[in-house]
Length: 406
Image (cartoon, rainbow, N blue to C red; front, side, top):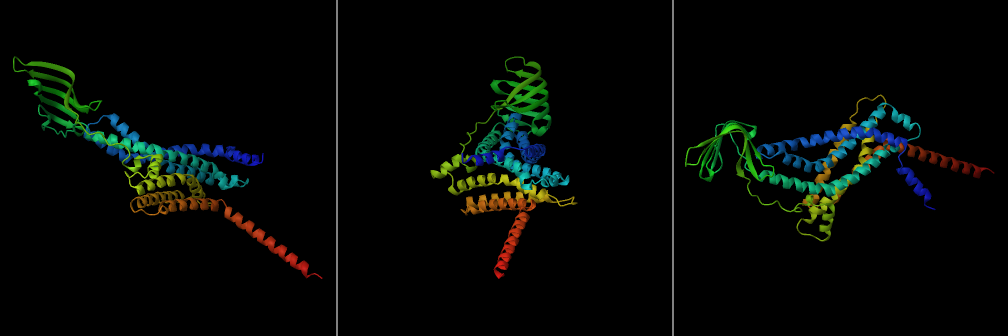
């Protein structure tokens, strides 16, 4: 077959060698550690907001877990490029300090060849983030907004204070000597309930206000108390209890959350392309077009992050300190901000798509040139060109000498 050599070369290119397996195995631990650290740092601020929501609205832990789950795809898309950069940089820097890079390159393997498995891994992560940006994040963004809307509008969120009366309804009054945990934990509780044409006076040592598991009502769990019931028709009755649950109020009826798709960031990439083709007027066309190109630009530049990290990780001999990692982060953060700025300009100012793809092209070219420079490719090409030029000059001189002979 005429194409069999090409197929063999492609098969050899994608078949991992011993060096590829070694480099990949070295990358996995720092990549996972960096991914965990970056995810924790990105989620920390939002976690505080979610905790405040739980404390203010008396929501149960399931709401917090659901909100946290819907945030993971968004921050995972930000953490993967950063973790890839840190992982590749740390491995190449360690190999450079231990002179492993020198040993490998002395056997005829270039720095570009060393970086190849990381670039291929970056291509795999590029496809993963494309699916993440284009299909998972839109649904997760809508789910977060819907859950947050429900959590912030459901239930009675009392601002109870010590020794102050509160009335969840016209027939219910509650007071406690000591209130903690933002109004949810009560000590020495007194409740007067005048519903059903009778009076119930309830005292308890401890009470805890919570939202019912089905979010249909706000309840209070009481411990170690008594209930004095007066129907007005006889002698009041006294009941003691170890644990009791009382209904404070039904959850307020709220309008259902809107349908998904009013924001271009809630649409998948296929839905955006479909609306652009059919000229759907529900969302501004520049906003949808900008969102599509923004997602593509972020995904397609990820394979070049290992090239940038590897180039900046190579150190000169006897050099111990280097700002390579700091420089890599400055470049990546600046590039991300430029992409976001271009995304905003294309969406709101109807600017050219070059504002998005220009920084992406600069990042790709800069990363590639840096890697080729650190690998000595330019010096090799220059030496070959000089050698060919000298050979050409010598051949020309020899020919002229032969012509000059009688």
